[in-house]
Structure formats: C-alpha cells, structure tokens
Figure 1 (spheres, rainbow, N blue to C red):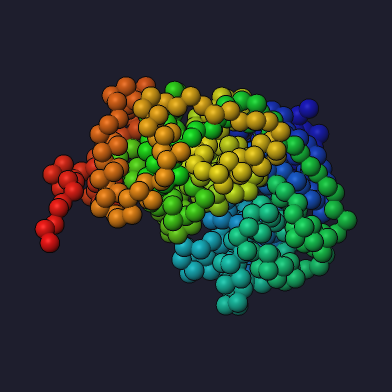
Figure 2 (figure 1 turned 180 degrees about the horizontal axis):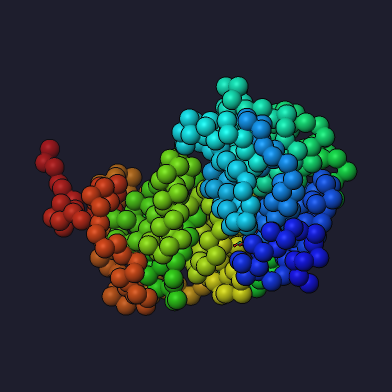
Length: 455
Ligand code: AMP
C-alpha cells in the first residue's frame, strides 16, 4: 500500500517521496483519511509508530486552502514538552517543504517578543506547550477563536505532568466546532473523561506497540547494591563492559538524580550529556543535538524529558532506576532496537522494591526478563546487594568517599574495557566536572586516609 490512496495533496506526496518513505505506517494508513474527512480522531499510539506524520501530513493538505490572520492561528498543536514541540516543528519543515505556511512555536525558555512578532504576522500552525500558550493568551496577544483544528499529542504524558486543567481550559477557549485529533499511548480514567468531554463522535484508531522494539531488543536485569554509590559503580562497569555500545540513554526516575549521575559520569571521564526539566531550553536543545550527532556517547535523562524524542539509532538503554510505572519501561526501551536494529536494555535492580517493580513490568510485557551474568569485577557489587548498604555502613560523607574510592582501586584490570574506551571519554574534562560531590577520584590518596584525632 502506498501513500497515494490516502487523499493527500500532490505537494505533500512529493515531500513524502523526498523523505524516502514508501508505505504509510498503520496509524497513518488508518488515521489520515479520517482527518481529511474532518472527523475527530482518537489515536491510541505511542512514539515510534509514525503518529506525528499521521497528523502533520493531512494538516498540510488541509491548510493549502485559506490563509492566516494576525493573532488568530488556524490550527493548534499542544505538546507536553518543549523538545516534542520542536520535533513537531521539524516535521512541518520537512513535509511542508513545498508549502508557504507560517509555523510558530510557543514554548518556555524562548523570548516572548520573538514569539509575539510571529503571532502578529499570522500563523497557520501554532505548536505550543500549554503553559506558554496560556501566558500569551492572558497577555491578550493571542486569539483562539480562529482555530479550525486542535491536536492534543501525548495526552497521557500531559496527565503525568499535571497539564490536564490547562488542556481543559484551552479546549474551552477554541471554537466548539473545531476538529480535534487526540493522541495518547494509554487510556487512564482521567484521559477517557477528557476524550468523552471534548471529542465529538471520534474515530478510534489503535495501533499496537511496535512489536519490533520488544523483539529486537535484548532485555536484561543487573543486580546492584542499593546505595547510590553502588548503583553508579554498577552502571560504570556495565557501560565499560558493554559489547557493541555505540551510544546509550541512561534513565533516572528523578531529575535531581539525573544531575547527580551526570556529574558523576563526567568525573569518571565519560562522554555524557544530561537532559532534565530544570535545564533551560537552549541547554536542553544543545544536549540533545550533541547526542543526536554522536558528539557525546551517553545521555542521562528523566522520563519526562526524554518522552517521545526521536533518536533513531540508540544501541543501549540503561535503567539506572527501575521505572515506577511499567508503561514507562516500554517507552524507555522503545528508544532502542528501532527499525529492525538490535538493541540492548539493561535495568539495574537494587533491593526489594525494585524486584517488585520489575515483576509489574514483566506482567505488562508478558515475559520474564533474565538476570545477566555480572561483568568482570562486579561480584563485589553483588555482595553489597546482600550486605548492608554503604550508606548504612558509612554514615559520614568523608567515610563514604573513602569506601567508594577503595572499591574503585580494587577493580581488576580485566573489567576495564571491551569497547572503545576512548569514545566513552571526554577529550578534555571541563573545570566544573572536576568539582567533587562524593567520589573523590582526583584527590591524592593521602587525603583519603582516615584521620585519627587525639582527644
Ligand atoms: P513518530 O512516531 O512520529 O515519532 O515517528 C517515528 C519515526 O518514524 C520518525 O523518525 C519518522 O521520521 C519515521 N516515520 C514516520 N512515518 C514513516 C513512514 N511511513 N515510513 C518510515 N518511517 C516513518
């Protein structure tokens, strides 16, 4: 089946052909004709299914007729994160190469004035995160009464991020007669309620999770001690002993831990960037771009920051923390094993709560994830899993430093590297990377010796 039977315009078909896509994905095949027939669509699909093009392509076709008026966008796309919004904008640039449409991005961290200028000129497609959109609206710089089509993308992620009240407000600000396209990967009760309230007789299009991800990804569990120091050491050993590691995303559950782990990996001279919600927009974009281009090998990320990112070729995923929601596990490992390539996803399991969370994941994916053979030198770490944690043993910060550094010194040479170590390392270590928060790898050994203070 080709794209030509879907009802898309010649210009859009030419742009699709230029990208090299031959056949529509199932969500494109099923949704595009309904979008063009002006029906509301409820798309249950996750990232990686081609859902962005499923709304961008018909929107481009429909926008060929008519023109934009100042401050009154014709269509509105809501995205939970700035990166996703930027990604959708890229899709418009790619598929809309033959169109002269004004596309504007309203996201946090970017100057209000530039965005305002664009709105004044009139926009055909407005792509926004809910908060920034409402900011502009409240300043009276934006009218939503001209919106003919509203896209709500990644709705379940909007729910996780607390955006549902904003979404409800926006739905009430756009005309009742608009067309709505609503995409979500899962259907929790709150999302069902929203769809019942704001979609009119929608066509439901549901596509399965891309089976390829699960089929082509080797999934493994790695035991670790519970303490954060033990987990970081386990991670380093896993990365150093990984076979065929080209690049990897390392997931943490909390953004605070993303920052800590990023600093620690920098100190250990890995080539690494971080992606979390507290970074400003230019820093997030720059980090992502560096990772995409292969300028850094590792990316430490939180679920929210990484959700939906289109990074086609990731060889390894490490779950530094077992995700709290089993669905997040599927999203995380969906970053690897794409397009038939093989990938590896390793989850660090530290303690009884993690074991429980893994059981829930196994129930969702319908298979057991085996424990891997510990890489060389990891036996010590496994012993720690059974023993009291380093924190319990060494309540004082200076003592923990010592404990960690002595473990590092005990590491046998064999554990160091089966992959190109140089690629993992930074060429030059920036000054801030040398700031210590607990590992003390750069301190002279005499400073690490315990001090006896005489009474
Ligand atoms: P998405 O689910 O929208 O994030 O898309 C995932 C990836 O699939 C993106 O890299 C798209 O460029 C790609 N893609 C979208 N549609 C097609 C298609 N029909 N054939 C091949 N790749 C596609």
